[in-house]
Image: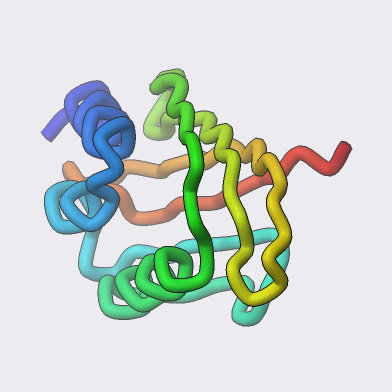
Length: 119
């Protein structure tokens, strides 16, 4: 699969809230995911990515999500996510503004790295 096809497909799934479908369709079995915060900050493999997603869903209520992009580069693309969410354990509502940078090799996403707005 070509970069543009993967990027547009991932965004299409994310806009529909079907993140697990995006993982199944586009992620390499050896995917690496990097977060700027939390523990662990880096996870490897599809099972770890799926577990991370399950944790997110069980701990957050999403009120609204906007997905922008993809913005294409050489071997990479960027997607912007703006989410109005409540962190369930603390009942804290906030807006999350993050960029996901995705690296594609061999027709699959091999790395995702997230950057959050700190302001």
